[in-house]
Image (tube, rainbow, N blue to C red):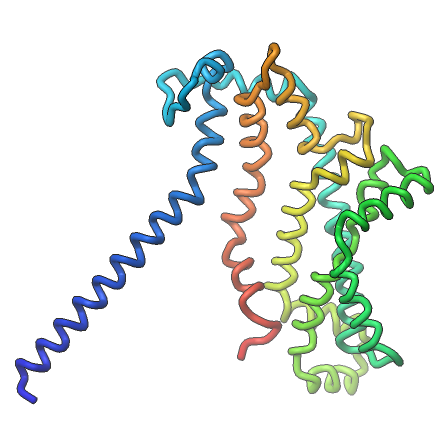
Length: 290
């Protein structure tokens, strides 16, 4: 084969690669637009005045008279700052308690040998098949019977464990070589110290991923807080959205509600931007590198 033929083949390969990249980036751009457009519409609506928004029979994709009044209304219509504090307390306490539960549970299923371990874990996994609605009903009856309605303890207790997170962490723990555990036991290391000094540092990406996902879950929690609390002193940020929405003069105050949603979303967006690499790393790999 002559040099010209090699040059033609190489040129054709470069052209095909360029076409492939162009098509790929085109579809990625379209997909990015589809994903980001709701966020754009949320921010745009939050800076439209109440009157101008309600006068738009055909939605406009821009505004020439932006206003921040909706953000002020979001904090004055309801005590949104207090709801923020309640949500932070709920999120921090729930996440901390859940970490303690799932770490010890995952360690027990991954490293401790006890009779019926596999059967117990199989039954434990079967709990994931139970619809959330049934769990909510059971939790509501239990919390009510215990007299914990309109308390932070009543908000927190049903969320302090997760079968999926225990399974995820157990799978990571099991990928750590047994030789490390045996060597640690020879050195007289206790199980707790081995867990704290060896297993958790190795599985740090997964633990961070679980923390972030739990924080997002708690921050977006809506059904359970609405069900178990009717006292505004224990409302979360998600509870205030409906009140803001109904604050319009005869019509729904969508701009103020969107302003509240923007404010509520900012902490989650910041967390994701800071830790998105850790999230991808924790989800895509196991406890040890292959």
